Image 1 (cartoon, each protein chain N blue to C red):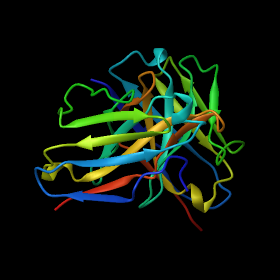
Image 2: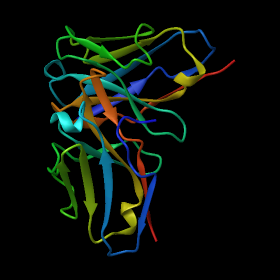
Image 3: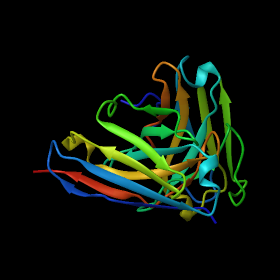
Length: 111
Length: 117
C-alpha cells in the first residue's frame, strides 16, 4: 500500500487527453511538499517529467502538465501519442516517515 | 552530460551481504545529495536512502533502516550502498538518482539484486 495513491491504469485514444491523480495526506502533499512526476518507459529507468508541481524539464513536451491542490496532485497529458505509453509515478516528501514517497504508479495505455 | 552507472548487483542468499556502487560523471558530484531507489520485479518505485552532498546526513526507509548503510567517496565520485541481512523482499532493481535539489533529475540504468537460496 503506497503512501501516495494513484489509479493502477488509465487509457485513451491517440489525440485525447488523460489525467492521472495522486492522492496524499496532511503529512506529505497536504503539508505543502512539492510533487514531482516521473515517466518510466518499458525496460528503462525512470525519467523526470514534471518537477515542483507544474514545471517541465527542458525537452519535455508541453503536452505534459502538472497541478497540485490540497492533498492531491494531477498529471495531464494532452494530444496522446503512442510513445506516451508508459508507467507514471508521483513523488513527494512525507514528514511522518521522514523520507521520500512514491505513488504506486499508473500504467498508461494508448488505445 | 550527467551519467550515473550502478554496479555490484547479483544473486545472494538470504541473510547475505552485497555492496552496490554508483559511479558519477558529468557534474560536480560533491555538490549534490544522491538517493538510492529500488523497484521490485513488476512493482512500483520505492525510495531507499539518501546521503547529503558531504556525507554528513543520511536517511533511510523504514524497510531497510538498520540493515543498509549509505556512503560516498567524493574523491572518487562514487556512491555506495552496503546491504546486510538481505531478505527475499529486497530483490529489486536498484537505481541511484541525483537530487537536483528536490526532484531526482538524473537516474542510472540500475543494477539487479536477487536474494534467493
